[in-house]
Image (cartoon, rainbow, N blue to C red; front, side, top):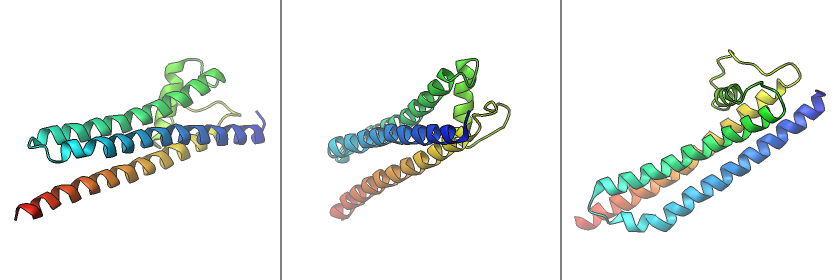
Length: 149
């Protein structure tokens, strides 16, 4: 494959992956802002934590959809002979584990850089959303404690 085509494909993959991530993070924040007031004053701490756990699962699901999306593209491009290998490679590259036991074929290798960058950006974005949610929950819970004093 020509290097310019490979770079353009990588940029397209990164853009689409981060668009998927943006939708996922919007859904997480929207659900939080919409439903958190219902859980804020719940007497049962388990309900609150279970709700936050569901938001975390939605974040995880967003990352899995992104890995699946990239793996489907790699498999469709015949970069790997079987989908399972494409999914494994994408997962280890997206998370930047990079064992190196599976490599893209010659002519596709620059795509690994874009997959890794997508994962780094996406995990950073998820971390920002998570910090925001945890900050708001602690702020609200401590405000409740201050009122009780």
